[in-house]
Length: 434
Image (cartoon, rainbow, N blue to C red; front, side, top):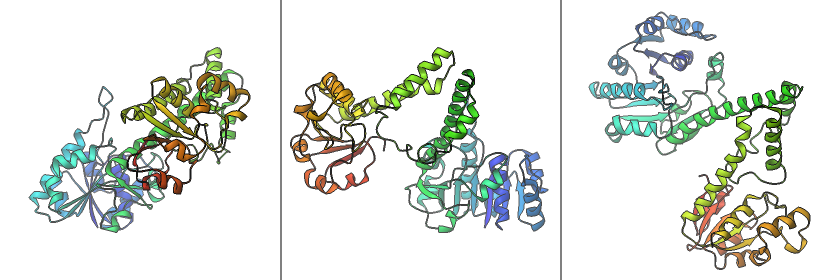
C-alpha cells in the first residue's frame, strides 16, 4: 500500500519506519525541510532505538520518500496518517491548529487530484469530539460522496521503546464514525495488534484515559514513597510487594465505573492515611483527593435520580456490596437517606438484609441514618416495584427473569454497576456512567 505520513516527529517517524518494514511504501510529509531531507536520505530525524536502521533499510529497498508538498503526497498514496502535534496552549487547552491546517490541505488535495477513494487515519492525540468536528468541517462532503473513509487510531508508543511497542502494542484501538469495523478489514491490521473498534470519541477518550491512569499510578507510587521514607520505611519495597497482588492490585478488578467506594475498609483507611500524612507533615494531594472525588461521584448519582423528575424510587441493593448485610459507609444508604430528606417516596429490596438481625455497627448506622428502614424494606421485588416508577439498581440481587416480568415501559431504570441485561427489559434504561 502507498501511505503518506503527515508529521515526522516521534509518532510519525516510528509509524513510517515500521510500516515500511511491513513492505508498505511510505511518503513522509512535514513543513520542516530538515526533517524531509533526513527522511529522503533514510536518516531518522529523531533519536529512537532501531529507527535509523529501519529507515536506512527502507531507503535502500525503495520504500521511503519525503516531501513538503501535500498535493504530491496525496496524489501518490491511497492512505494518509495524520501524526502532527497537538501542543498545549498557555491556558492548558489543546491546540488543534496543526491538525486542522493539515486536514484542510489534505481535503483540498483530494479534490484537486479528483481522487475517487482515500483513507484518512488520525493518529494525533485529540480530545473526544475532535475527530468528528474536523471531519464535519473539512471532509463531510467527501465522505458523503464515498470518496473518503476516516478512522481514528490512537498511538500507544513509549519514547525509547517505540519501535518495539509498534510491533507488539500493549493496546490497539481503531475508531470509526459509528463504532462498527471498517468495510476494508485490512485496515484493522495496518497499525498492529488486534484492535478494539470503538466510535471516534471513544477511541479518542481511551488515549487520555490510559495516560491519566499512568500519571495516577506514578503519582500514587511517589506519594506512598514519600510517606514511607518520611517514616523510615522503604517505599520501593512496599510498591514491589503491592504489585505482587495481581488479583486485586494489578488487575481490572476495580476498573469498572459505577458505585462510589464504600464499606468498612476503603473510606476508613483512606481517611486514616490522609490524617497520618498530615500528622507527619507530608503532602499527599492525590490521596487527599480520593474522598472528595468519591463524594462528587455520589452527588452525580443523586443528580441523575433528581433529573428524572420521578418522586417514587425503588432501590435494589442497599448494602455496600452483594451477598452481605454490611451497611457501613454504603453509598446506597447515603442515597436513601438523602432522597428521604428531600421528600422522595422510597422502597428498598435487599435479600441479604433483615432488620431484626442487624447488630453492632450495622444496627447503629441504621438507627442513626434510616430509623424507619423496616418500613422501607420490602420482602419481595414485586412489593418494591409495585408503585415506584424509578428503579435504582445497585446490585444484581433480583434475577433478570424476574425483572423482565416486573418492569414495564412505565419504569425508568438507573443502572449503577453495569448490568447490561437490564437493557433487555421493557423499562427505559440509563447507566450511571454510560
